[in-house]
Length: 351
Image (cartoon, rainbow, N blue to C red; front, side, top):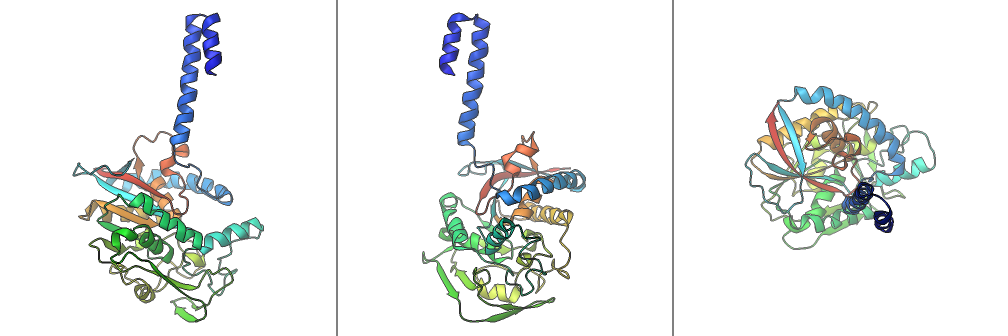
């Protein structure tokens, strides 16, 4: 292209030369920006249709929900390391959990062109995907986050009260919250325990795909960073057994370093009878409530370890992205890949 432009300068008028050089400039700029841009297609192939449909639904919900909120919530993307100098700003780091066993199950299920999902009550009556943990790849994805989190200085880590999100936060911020520098993972593959909820008696056994084995990623914390479980960061609930959390008592035993004081219900409050999926409006409203809690808390550098749908709803129906003129192609509001983190400045303006 450069050769053609130079050649054209010898045979065409000055105005044509300028046009050619301008075209070259934009082409080069496009490739430079493409090489520097993060991966904008983090969704799996089998997710694309669902994400497209959800995007349309959330844009409609956002048009109705945002004007009803007391504050306009505005995000701007940052390269972390920048200090918060404006007292009206806070930093938030949004993280989707690493790959869970249910993610693998869904990929395989859809590849086989089976109807429904592998974790519907009808296809998972024994609840083997109940509150699934991270796969070995998911553990690696969470651990790999340390290259991004090492230079962060969060003063609050908010986690969904679901194991895959908790484990991701503990591994991703291990160097911030550990005292002895080791991560202990113990897996019990022979014992059988029972987790009872309000709606079902789920026998907990090791399965071929390891989806419900009782491994525990345990990190002893001596840090002043508060790690707080918050139900508003819960994934969209109902119908999918993978989106039903363990009972609070069991979670406290598994993760004693987590503050579960905000978790009021022993069992999952969003599960209901398990037959109805939570509405996207309900999820978006939970996202708005979570952002209000962040607004009034004293901490200014906050991590949120959560899930794909709650994060996608937050960005597409609750928050305004500064400088976002093309919502359908903006990376900031795109679907999160497993083990992905995005950092933002956030500020609140009266609506």
